[in-house]
Length: 174
Ligand code: GNR
Ligand code: NI
Image (tube, rainbow, N blue to C red; front, side, top):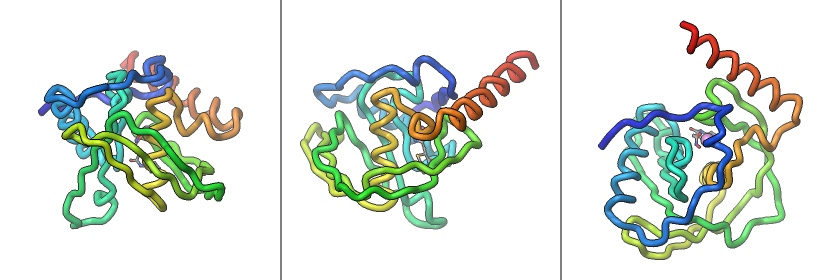
């Protein structure tokens, strides 16, 4: 297992549509292990492969991280697709490890059904609501090169991206 670097916006690699995996093999399982290590170290509840610079349709999540002392509940999704979504929309505050220290309300489908392949290359379907629904939609967005800031007003988006760009400049000059 290896800790990977999480890309921070603005970064062109976060805007690329990721490639389908096809068959889930050991190299994909190894990638998911690195993603869990990286996600847990960063205290995130989800991570998409493009966030570590790997342009593949792979997501890991663990919502149990939200509850202190709860046992870990790792979830793995390869080539996920939303096969149904509710008409109902709900707002929720989102953050992103690639948009550190910024939060905004995003409207998303209240419920979704996701078809994906698991770590054994078996097709699965999962009905999602609540935080699970928000998180899986946020992660699938990453596979399309979309960040949560792409769902908010362009004024708020450019303000956040400008601050992140400035923070990068300061870090590079230090
Ligand atoms: O850790 C994360 N928390 C979170 C909170 C609300 C909505 C979405 C998320 S996902 C985020 C981790 C991340 O950036 N995944 O891509
Ligand atoms: Ni994110």
